[in-house]
Length: 255
Image (cartoon, rainbow, N blue to C red; front, side, top):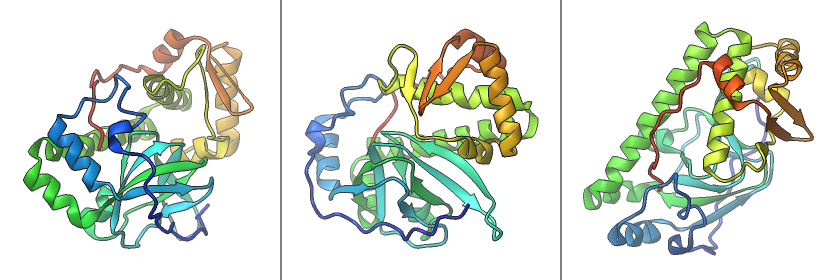
């Protein structure tokens, strides 16, 4: 499923100061020094608002901007000429988007919204001033790139060596833990716009196999997933199936 949407145009309106960022009060993100906060506030040019199903970046296209997802859900993927795709990551609030396009001068993957989304926009041409003038923030960008590499390693291990039910459990556990860190979980349940096709394209399974694998988790009373609300009924049981261990990397950077 290759997106036919055109890459998004950029909003010039700035409504949210970095001083008032709703994400910065979450324990998962590290605090800025006053100088870092001032720099990021001038680095940011505005917010971009997108509807569900919009394309932010398209594989092969140049991009003049970097982004931090402020609210909503997105995903990034690579595709083959016949339309088959591999979802590489689900993007949640606080995630940094577009670094590859900045370094390689063109996007190496497509990034699309799963829900309505708001992104903070940063001009690529100012990235060097971040590295030269704010080495702490420069390290943060490097840290975020290393974290992306770790996530890809874990995904590759899932596709290459985990069984179907282990893959599914690992992905759900990963999303659940991330949503929990962002205070999106209530009574062990959270909203997610992900559907079974997204799961199949992430885990390298057919749609039929994806459905059967989810059914196994339902039958074991591990999870329920109704009307886009995923409930983890047995977190310990899900973690045991996935052989999941938390990475212990909190608090983490945010740009």
